[in-house]
Image (cartoon, rainbow, N blue to C red; front, side, top):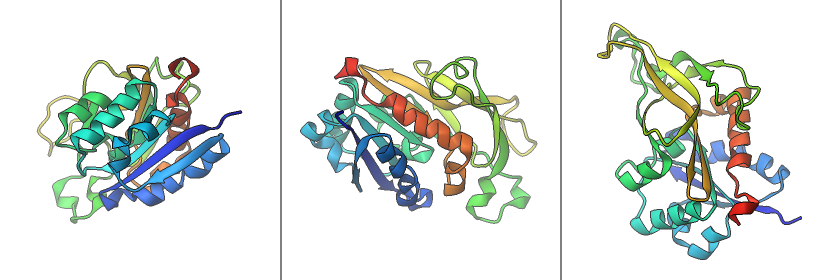
Length: 236
């Protein structure tokens, strides 16, 4: 049996521990029959031959920048059937200056609401809140999230700006709080898929730190997302 080829691209803001986070999933990929290549920059996206031969891209690059040539290479590969997936800021807060990247993934981190101002101490934990992730009706039937019950986390809760080409598998609701300016609860997608040409994209917004990635529900969703996004025979 021919082994699938996975490309793990990591870098960007160190606060999301791109090396440690991706290392958590390398054994799963190898045990699932993938040959894994790891790159520390997005330069590989401009390598047309390598990208065309890749079945799955796992990206963990928060913020940072991407060149037009690199983005074109990534988008072209996805349109031809290469799968694309990632978690948290490594995919939903990448390349903020690129509207074409936003168009590709269908959703962009806007903020993570924080604690009451008087409780903040200037640390990452200022933005950790308890919240629930709710599986949608579509999510209860989708291979990425089927059988997973609603679950709770205590970490950054992403508020995402998005379009309606995404298929939302799970949501999270930002409540009204006295110190926030919005006036009604806001529902954001927490897990979504997107079809782009022959390619499949999966975005999972939880995953700020290694302990969140180790949560059984989060980890299962990410791992299933890798399998589902991978190039299918019809896209070969």
